Length: 155
Image 1: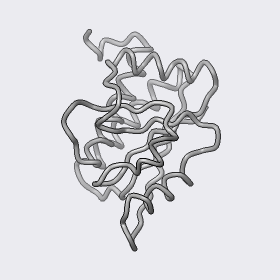
Image 2: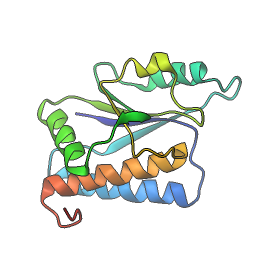
Image 3: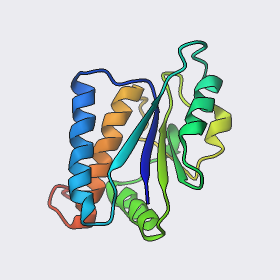
Image 4: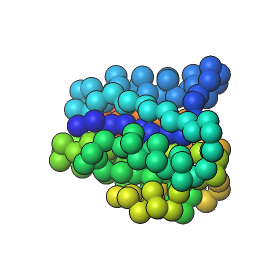
């Protein structure tokens, strides 16, 4: 199993990058004993056009063949953290790769969204794509702690 995040934009040094790195490091340490691999982040950037279609082409190339594709989209399902953890465990148990896709400031191209196995939202509000990365990294860590039976998640 592989876990990837394909995201538009490059995180520069700063608080968002520090938070993503911290949560993904915590996830790697907690997930190792659960059969969850470290997360690979693939950043894509279209410096020329910057259109959703151009970003979609770059994101498509970053999605591993055969992976379950999870689009981060404000129109998606709003799972609880335990539901998210259960889905992640299911992919692990099926030995299926998963790729979380985060679009740019304008969102995800509709044609790319049709490839999704699951579309999830982090709430009814719209979040900047850089914060979505932080929140996804935290939810991955939280999922690992739920699967490990850790008290981090207080249900």
